[in-house]
Length: 189
Image (cartoon, rainbow, N blue to C red; front, side, top):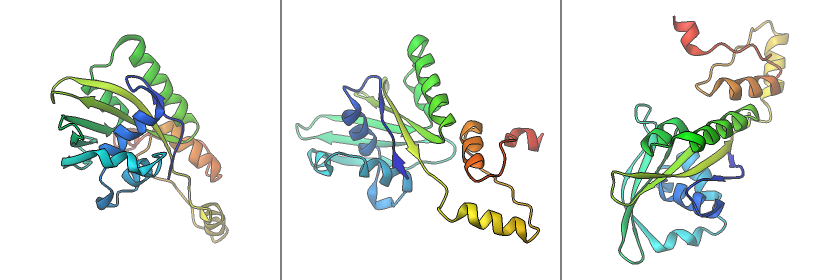
């Protein structure tokens, strides 16, 4: 899993956005997304000026992580990263900024990228939407061949994912599974 080109909103630039995302991560938990965000830092020493005094890991209900951070000057703040729609709602992103964020998420998804929204709060209540981090998590190199061998042996292969439909369509296309995608909600109805 690798990070693509960050899309800054309230962050000064892509580097600041990646740093905020890394501060909302915890390497010790060995979460693949957290590790990809931390690995995207131009210089990992950028984290040295910060102390993470609290961390809420990702869960499927809240769909985000959150870090309580103290900087080198003793100032505390919170950072969060997670599902873009969740982080956008938390930051109360609206109007053209919300429309731009939604377009970016859709454009990244069409290219097979997952996305993370990142935000920061100085007081724990009002959040500033910092931007979007695109993550590319390609199928394993042997996936396509494994699928072909399975089909040759009479096994019908289906892909099940919790990803955005556009991401699923892109990945299924790469694996030659077709692009007819059914959202889980349609299957469970």
